Length: 328
View 1 (cartoon, rainbow, N blue to C red):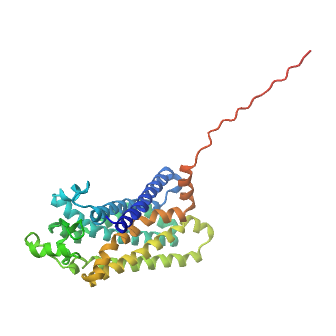
View 2: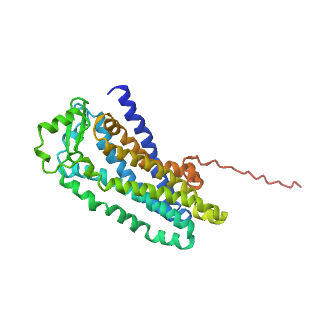
View 3: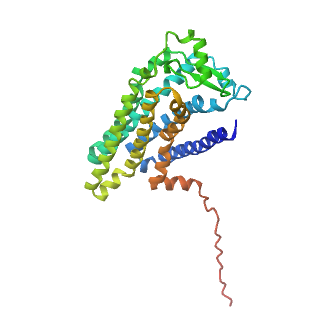
């Protein structure tokens, strides 16, 4: 691994570890102070955060760690000895499935913020009661499309040209690296009945991403406009900084949606190779930016997180009382 590859791997690994730690710290603070921090937004934040952390580790294993793992690496067994078809197909399935979930969740949270601003007295109790069931349903619904990936056969091969392991997914139709493409040309038997072009894989995902991106951005701008009609008391109760968090997330998802469309439009060539290299970093932004935004924009959470690391003053002040004696 040369210096450029090392920096490309370890720098994101460093900031990702910090952001995941911040995720868990915010989880702890919210649960620890649930009586004062209880809100429908935080319920949805925790659920979405768990989904995002799971997504990060799946992407890390299948898109990042493999790029720096050679045949002689101590970690090579993680890929060389992976002979469980279900797990390989599961990773492929979830890479598409969690894209659905991330975009739908952001749409739900955007809806939450808008309705809470407009109908605080009715909307907040509704979301507190039904937010988790709705988000669980949002997690399950995409399986209507993504279940088909379990019938396809994902293989893990070692690419001699790049000196690393690669996930060869028969549904993508085109492989970015020449060695993997050669592998496909030489042995098509394992996936000849399961081949799907890239456009078919994104047949429902891309329209969902486009709709959710436009919807989320629109809802967040509408929420910002509604702030002008609210008095300061209602603004405080509605936790308007949460809107900024969701707006940033929505804009980042627009970028991810744009790159996904480009990937389908130009599945080969230099653009495809560039996207294959940098899409995992876009995924980091989609999955790990929320705790940083929450920490920066929400003073109550920031104060409680910082307080966890402040050294408590345990010094004891001894007061010596002197008793005066009357001498006769």
